[in-house]
Length: 150
Image (cartoon, rainbow, N blue to C red; front, side, top):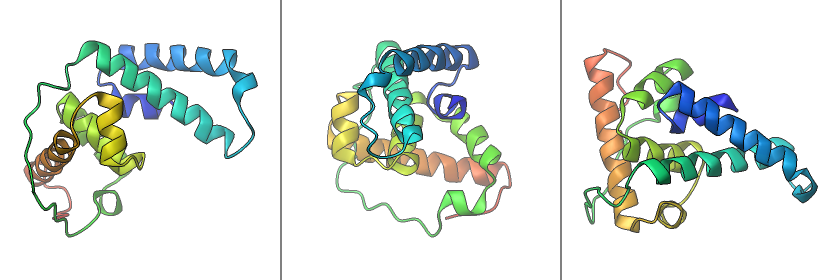
């Protein structure tokens, strides 16, 4: 679960704090687990929410650029061509807004509507942050001579 926190929170110490507070929440709310779905999934959801709460406190997601009506095209899935550590290393280089939306959309499976609600931003901002994150990741891949994915 620390890996989940690190994907969202750049600073290791902050990620550790979020992990501890999230696990404390898990332990104090065990009676709320309904035994529907996986226990790991339930814990993961709590930790992602803790990460988002931490990021909302420390970053203003409303100070982002909106890009409307953009078609996002990718030739391949980044996860298919890069090692897990390569992805984590690249995600750490992204600005917080890009990284958060990318994590939520690509890795956690959130929809733009849900991301917008969670972060208090518009759907178009969520879409633009994802587009800009993908473009930045492609640039970073080329700069670091990693496998070309798009």
